[in-house]
Length: 321
Image 1 (cartoon, rainbow, N blue to C red):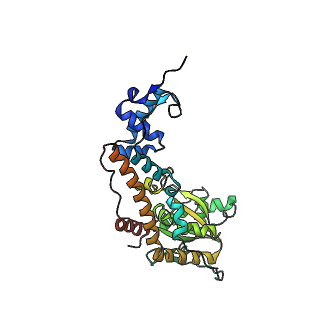
Image 2: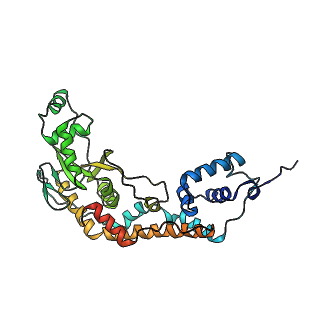
Image 3: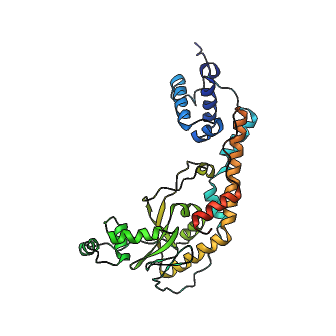
């Protein structure tokens, strides 16, 4: 006996059919919500209704008849999913980050602090740089002295990062977080603190420093809200996650000076090109979603910030005006 085929157009409501077709084409929930002008929660509930009607494997079922996607919609889906729509945050690393020249700096300890605005800060903080091995293991006496406030602020901050409560260390780290990015001289070790927003915009430069083993990721800092602007999903074809602040470890003393100089030079000479490449990728994805929205009889998605506005946001976050 031949199994009767199911016509999706007769089984599903109009909205269910629209959402199911886009989901089968590979669009994510936020993309479907954007093109149809509805909430992501509505997309989720409608997909649950489709599953209830057609079963959990409805996307792969061969006995369900689906209408063909319009050529315009199909082309837009290819733009969203093709290799050219890869992660711009990663691709721009190659486009916007210059190669590092060889280090010719002599190791030297620095105790002054350099802020992003060019002013001096309390002892224990200098410009950016980051990554290194974990600090030396703590012993009971150092833990006790930290709790009693007998350690230097930098030494107490090390223990605070390791999870041992220390008011002095916490105050030291809070001062560091008052700027967008800066070097912390933690005792004999040096760490780079990068705020959530600065870490997003400096990603290509930080990646170059990391690839050249001048900094290494130490740990995330979840004390503040992640950087998650509303347009973030347009920057990646994968799942868009907010960026957390983070600590990196420096390779050695001289690396701190070099990393600071490199990051400042990158902001002066490469930030604008990086923002432009990111904006172009975002516009490409927006135009694709707009074509799908028009084909579905919906209005245009929320306009993206233009290039000057996006560059102004990057400069604001990085504290460079």
